Length: 416
Image (cartoon, rainbow, N blue to C red; front, side, top):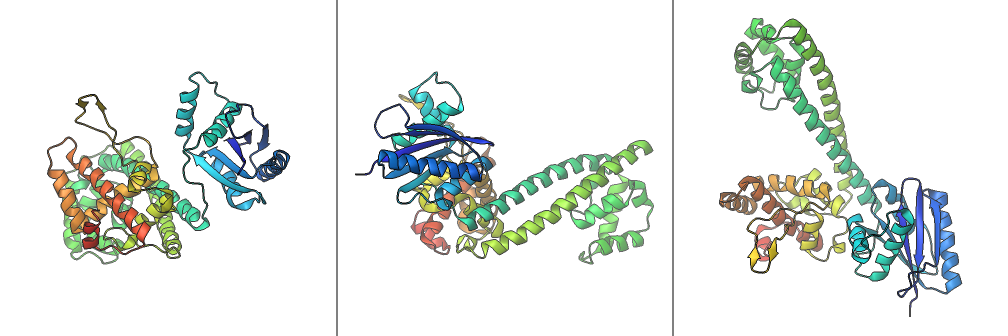
């Protein structure tokens, strides 16, 4: 019969506080100590735990720690796959901090908040059972996740910078939105914004010269550059005029903004290439779904990890923040429900963005989205997108578990 040591670790940037509990209901710890959160510290942790196992003639070790971003990543990896605890069997569990918080309140409403107490409660949670799937680490998925999360950060920053650029753009060229460029941050559009100091420069330029400028910046991709030039001049004529001092300030601000946007665009493209190369080494079938290209597939796979750690698609949906709260008591049942606020925000982003794309490219999802959007409800469009993303969870879960290519008829048969 195994005799288990429960090791709770409270992680911070500089140190790890450890509490070791035996089996049973004994609240007294076998050992408490603190080590630095670095390689020498985790080696000391290994030595202390092995000594404790031999002293008390134990056979199994369960390590538990809270997910604290980058601060817990090294420790979890070292405990799971780098350090050896032979001949003893060991497993590692990484908890959502909210689970430990709820467990703590359930047992002691007025428990103090400090590292020693937190380490004890993590060990006690390990001992109580009802544990998540044991932590596993994959180098390829961890590397892919670092790339996709970095690109996510770049894209979010790019969106903020673009929105700020548009505020200055309205001051400089108030009718630009009615001009010929749909995407304001395209190479040609940015060249126009940066090259011309004022709308008067565009108005006073000959159509032929402006047409040549547009053709050169657009690398001759416009079917009719003359129409583009005329539309640009028309928008310039109807725009407000700025006084010189204000115009100079706006131009300087926009020039700085454009340099940042171009740099971000370059970094996003570079990361996209790296993600594509990395994803090519990972067997997957998500890209067989119309609308799920490399970036969405990589984001979903890197955040989900090993699909077997989720017992079913409902657990995956909850982890991705695509589950709804329930408001019910007795005979009362609330009509409206909201999406839960917890969950992996990166996974929720990739499911939602992928759903936007899939409902455009796939007839099954397009019909479902249209049906939900037509239902009389508040925030019909947002609701339809969230429900479509939830439907996509079932599909992704099915494809990852079966490793099959997407076939709409098969999906319908599986009630996806």
